[in-house]
Length: 234
Ligand SMILES: Cc1cc2nc3c(=O)[nH]c(=O)nc-3n(C[C@H](O)[C@H](O)[C@H](O)COP(=O)(O)OP(=O)(O)OC[C@H]3O[C@@H](n4cnc5c(N)ncnc54)[C@H](O)[C@@H]3O)c2cc1C
Image (cartoon, rainbow, N blue to C red; front, side, top):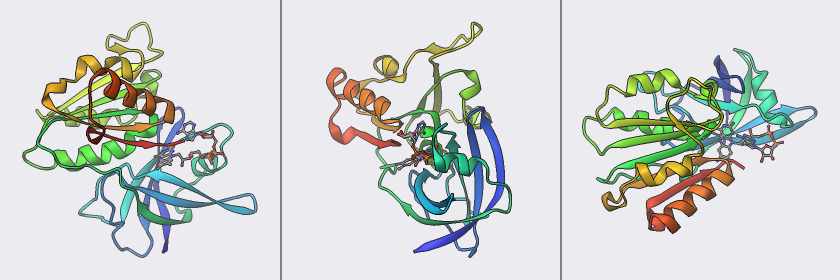
């Protein structure tokens, strides 16, 4: 079944990423589980192209028909460029929500690993879970190129007040002033994870990163396949 969306808001999150807030025109809830994605139908030249975008927001009780996505501008990509050009009031068609990359509740800690807009479904999952009074420890390991690419920075400042949440940012091309972690996400897994705590890891982003993280967890840290949950964007 397809539904109509209208753009309520656009925000620049980084030099290459634009957030879009949509409302379902029929006013009914989107009805997603954090981690799921929607399929957007976008007019490109004389044809309609469909692409998947993770929902970056958890269900909003006050406005269940609203949700947010964040789109990386891919220089030779048709749909991402068309989405970056959308303005408030524009309409488009979607189907969904779809997908099985959702949070399974375990008593053990969870580590969320992302690069770029791979953080979107993880943001929705963490936001929903921190709204609950009790639960396991949650850590986000976010890999970005530079400080300017750190998406949803203000959100993490808010989450820091939860004793259950920890943020680890690693930059591959930091400025000289950067004092935090450096390099790719997979190089930090061994120091951030205690395999004895039997954590679950949720990883999302481009395929090369997801494969490296999965390989490190299984081959070097002895993770079982059931402890690793992943979504690939390409
Ligand atoms: C389940 C799922 C969820 C997704 N969620 C998001 C999301 O929340 N935000 C988002 O920006 N994209 C997301 N994507 C990717 C998105 O569906 C498109 O592939 C992307 O926007 C490129 O589409 P395009 O038409 O602009 O480029 P295309 O012409 O389709 O592809 C151009 C090239 O871009 C590569 N590419 C795809 N995604 C990216 C990326 N993020 N960064 C750099 N290169 C990329 C492709 O491998 C391809 O080589 C998701 C994909 C999947 C499968």
